[in-house]
Amino acid sequence: MTNPTVIIGAGFAGLFTALHLCHKHYARPVILIDQAERFVFKPLLYELLSNEMTTDQVSPRYEELLSCSNITYVQDLVTDVDLNKRTVELASGLCYNYDNLVLTLGSKANYFHTEGAAENAFSFRNSDSANKLKKHLRSCLQRASQTKNDLERRSLLTVSVVGGGPAGIEMALTLADLLPEWYAPLGGNIAEIRVVIINRSQEILKGDINSHLQTTVHKAMAKRTVAVELESQAAVKAVSPQSVEYEQDGELKQLSCQTTIWTAGNDVNPLIKNLSIPEDLRDRSGRLQVASTLQLSSFPEVFAAGDCAYTDAHLPSTAQVAYQQGAAIAHNLSALIKGAPLKPAAVHLRGTMIKLGLGEGAANIFDRFIVAGQVGHLIREGTYLELLPNSVHNFKATTQWLTDEIFHHHHHQIHQRQSAITLGHR
Image (cartoon, rainbow, N blue to C red):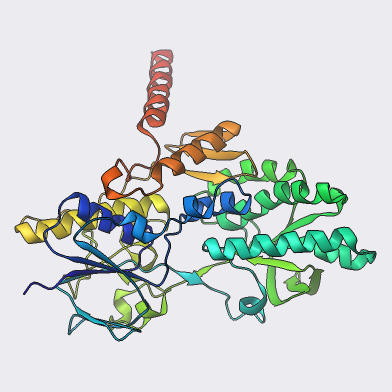
C-alpha cells in the first residue's frame, strides 16, 4: 500500500503545493495538516482591519479551497515528526506514515525575551488577531471620546508599533489614516492621535527587500492624516498594558500608550527546531538548509520551503517566493512518481509592493520603476486580489506575482528607454 504525501503547514507554500498537486492530477493521496480552520492571506489583513474586505475574503476556509478528491485537509496540531521512521504524530492521536513529506510551517512571533511583550503586545498574523486589534482600537477611541482625564485620553489615543520593517511600516501608515476616520465621528480631536514606530536600528526597512523604498516611505509617513512618528535606535525593554519602555541613547524612556503592536521579528516554528537535523545544516535562526530542488540533503524524500527553509540563493520570506516554491515542489513530487529528473526551484523576484496608508501604496517593478500613490495602491490591491486562492476548479495563474499586463507594459517601457539611451550614445 502506498503511503500518502504529507504536507505540514497550510500557509502560502503549503497550500499552493497542494493546489498544484491537484492541478497536476497527482497520483498519490495528499494529507495537508494545519492547526487553523482558515487560510491567512497576510498581505490583505490590513484591508480586514479597515473593513475594506471581509474575513471570508481575506481568510477563506480550507474546506472551500481544497475541493480536490485526493487531498485530505486535517485540522490538527503536529506534535512530532520522526524523519527516520517517516512518521507524523498529531495531538489528536492520529499518526501518518509518509513516502514524501513537505515542511512548510510558517514562522511565529519572536519577542526576544522582552518583558511583557508576549502578554501585552498585539500580534497581527491572522484574521483573529486582526479582529481582536480592531475591537481593541475601537474601544480605546470610544473611551477617549468620553474621558475628561487628559493623560488617560492621550494614552488611549497613542499607538506604538514595535519594528520598522515592512509589517511595522504598513501597520503604522494604515492606522495613521484609519484611526482619524474612526475617531472624528465620535467628536474627538484627531490631532491628539499619535502613531509611533519604535525601531531598533537607525534605518527603517534595513536589510529588507523593500529597503530601496525608504525615501518613498518617509514621504508617506509625513503626509498621512496623522503624521507617523519614528523613534530610531530604540531597543524595547518592556511592554505593559499602559506603556512601552525602550532604551535610546543610553537613556531609559517610557511611552504612555494602551496599544502596542509587535512586528519586530519572526522565529522558526518549534517543530522545525526539534527535528533531528544537525546544526551545520541550519542557519543561525534554525531554518533548514535545502538543495536547489528544495529537498533536505540527508532526507531527500523530504521537501521544505517558506519560512522554515533556506537555499544558497538566500531568498526573502515573501509570498511571491512561497508561491513559486510551492509550484516547484509539486513539480518535483510529480517527477518522483514518474521517475523523471527533478528540477531546481527557479524563483524569479519580480518586484515588491508595500501599503502606504489607506488608498496608497508603492509597487517596485523589476527593481527599476517605483509606482507610488493611488496607482501603486491599485497595482498592489489588484495583484493580491488576483492571487487570492480559489478552489482548484477555478485554478488560474496563481504563481504569477504581478499580472502579465502590468509587467509587459513596464518591460516595454524599459526597452524603449534603453533603446533611446543607446541611440543617444551613437
